[in-house]
Image 1: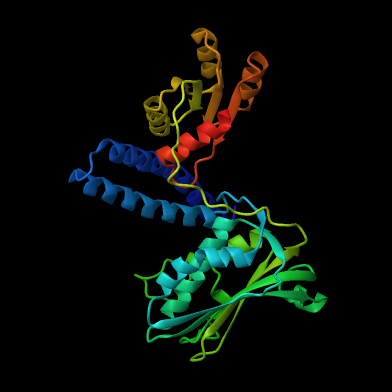
Image 2 (image 1 turned 30 degrees about the vertical axis):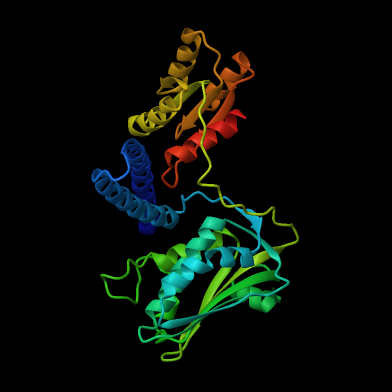
Length: 350
């Protein structure tokens, strides 16, 4: 196996295991917060733990993307919508010394991509552009419909056809010509060692490639830089992206839930959340133990929850025995809050 493949495999394995632990850490801090009364001084320490865990979760997401094991959930969407939703956050990221111009095409075609990954791309490209303009300047983000002929498409290693372009242009210091071919290499960075890991643009490149697109850079020293991403256009219509109502009540329940998974920390968090909300819990480590627990309890199983384990056989057998049972597979990615978990359970039962 090539050295880089080995590094990717190692990074993905460590990041996945660490991400699972972070889910439990963040989940338990949220539960602690719910238990503290308003004004309790301990809430400050709990919130500090949560922020640190979230920062660690961001790092693990970078490692998962680098190792190409990050969850990829493409959907039909409009890039203008993604830019507009991220615009307030990007404006804060840019700061007051840089003018932030946004130029969106009015008739922009749709693309198929992962919305959260696109937001990560926007944050990283904007942060890079900001760092290239320490004395201030202009940052322009634009969208456009483009058609790539055979020659241009071959240069970009994509198929000829219609694409949607997203560009980020700055008026900063520019990039040395010798450095430009290496910008998307893992661990290569033009920043000081303390300010960059060298994974950012490599992750951006990986996400774009995963979406069958391409990213390139044009830059002259002293004249700024332009990063342009093209993604294949689609005639499909976006279904719409509604932000979750974080203020909505997660609700309670009395149903019987069979919880199946092999990580005690995650199992403990989920069990604690659901017990507090009135659910009856049966907990098992594997399919055999889960089916045995379901049979010995004598109760009807309303929901089977699986976390990071191959529970296909258990789900199939449980449905054969109890056709009314629902199944919810919780793929652990970003840390899951107690309310978000409870809402997912209610949605699955509904």
